[in-house]
Length: 217
Image (tube, rainbow, N blue to C red; front, side):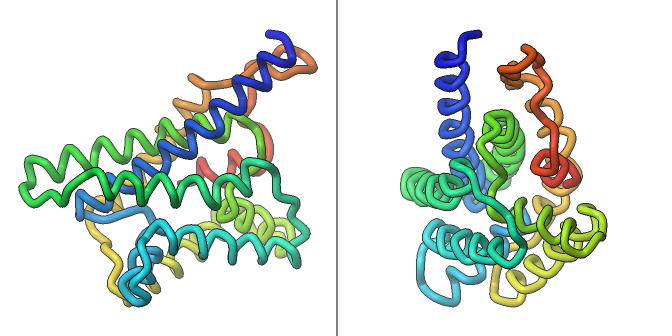
């Protein structure tokens, strides 16, 4: 694959992946059976402030990105794009998808949202334009403290879930199901959407700390 074609593919994967990530998060909101950890916090803050959950996601993402400065993390195109694209896609999907009340609708929304989240994660991580702000926070804490990424992610995500739940965010079976399934799903789709490396034509792209930060979940 030529360099221009490879770059075009990576850009498409990045923005399709981030958009689908926002769509998947919105489906989990509509399912109402529990969300991924950071969106529990976002929903709680949205309840507190009256802002949309997408806007809160953008604000929190920007705030987390500021924490990269003392951690000496360097954002990439994917990092900055993550802050805005996911929130906009999330609000757009919530505006288009009505509330669901019957379990026969909510359960498929939950399962579809989790699988789609795995697809989205595989797409945007494989694009190799840098981790999202929250994942970079984990890797930065890992490097500065010497503690494992697993421990850093666990501490941060337990904190954001507890805070979000206290503020009114939704924690449920979906939160647990997401936690145990997103790692295997992301690993699967990282292989599916792998872009060959320019230097040696390798299809291995899930290298380095960003992928490890994602796949622990």
